[in-house]
Image (cartoon, rainbow over all chains, first blue to last red):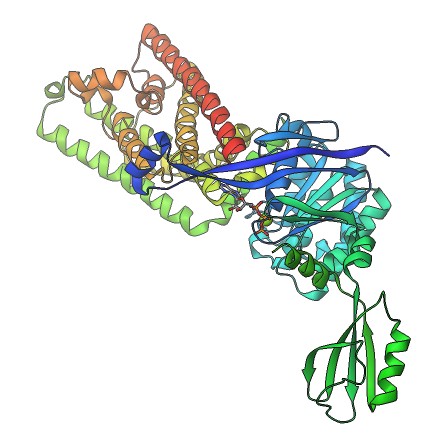
Length: 328
Length: 265
Ligand SMILES: Nc1ncnc2c1ncn2[C@@H]1O[C@H](COP(=O)(O)OP(=O)(O)OP(=O)(O)O)[C@@H](O)[C@H]1O
Ligand SMILES: [Mg+2]
């Protein structure tokens, strides 16, 4: 497999003026050498193959958006090299933009005052989309994203979820090879999120579109991504398949047990670790490398009166938190 | 090309949705014409035309006042587009598309201007014809020259706005530049008083600024106030300004992109 995105030792520093305000202030700022440097991205490297669905996560300010802006040609790295589709994005932004789709969840790329239909019409001309492809794609978006429900509504009057669906459709209208999604599910309700996830899954599967997804919602990652890249303060601290993440870091399992009566402690079963309690309920952690769930459960039932029990798989959110946690 | 024509037409449609702004603009435009023509009437009643040494008779100054205002009304455009996009960061959504930012912004402004010409300029002109004593040029050449000269004038105004808008990359606030432009455009463009009335010292300054080429020159050419040589000089002057401002626009854009790309603006 050949990689469609290559990032090699990219560093991006921002100069931040120790700002003076006002007109005179901004004039002085022009000539001022009085700034500090922020390292948004620090010597990152990765390769992404055609058709991959990659989750790109990290805490606020970790450098996710900065990376996406470099790959979409809006920012020039301070050092290092990036290639998208064989094109160096920041040297050839316009050429690059023809083959990629981008969604910035925080802002719409549609025309605020125009009805949705007309925004799509404009995009059709911008990307020189042939009529039959346009029709075909519109039918698909109408089918899955139900964008025709608000075809005649100006974008500014759409709800967040409706707008996001339109923005996603807009980014895919020209059949891009790569889709960059910077927080596409931000602020959406569970149903809207679910719709969007289903749609993305289909696009990735049916069109082999490479997708890079930035999000703070680990359920997005769990539902969609086969690979996860974790960024911390501008550095990549994890880049592996999601399954590896679960295997290596998800070493602990959680049992949720409801007892018939309240027990002060469960010290007859020393293998386990109670980390949360609520009336007669206890949440219990145990290492899944050392013990099987069956043996733990039978030990508990031997010693205590159980009403109900359930097992939770380690969830990605907790694991990612552990990874962040391990860094400090 | 097709795309820019579409941008023009969408921008035109968008204007139609601003109904209140439209009516306010209509009344405003007409009021301006009414006030200025009344002033000229009063002035010319008080003083003899020779007193001004400007070469305008009472009838020709009224005609000038009406036409210059019609052109000014038609040239209405949103001069905050770029500043707004830079400040909010929405410029990014244009940059991820394979389009020329200069051309889509120009298209948006042209759409607005076509609207203002058809919906405000022409009706106000028609209304003025009933009320004021206006003499129309009868020669077709005047109309052709108007189209050429007004196009140049329009490009000059657009590019001044465009360049000031791009200043938002370097200055937090472009308001001071805008303010300066408003003042100079209002006075030096001949939009209030024809440049001929200015004292000689002021005229020599105005000659070196682009503003008189926006309204004064197209109006005078249209009304046949210039002889052939003057028309040619005026058009060459306009072409020079268009070329110069275009070069400045390009350079400013390239520098703005470099700043954005390198520093993240
Ligand atoms: N234009 C800019 N000028 C100066 N500093 C910037 C600029 N853009 C980003 N930064 C800084 O770079 C760092 C990384 O920002 P970035 O937007 O990439 O983070 P992020 O991972 O997308 O965060 P979030 O989850 O909050 O969106 C931050 O410390 C931010 O303050
Ligand atoms: Mg971000």
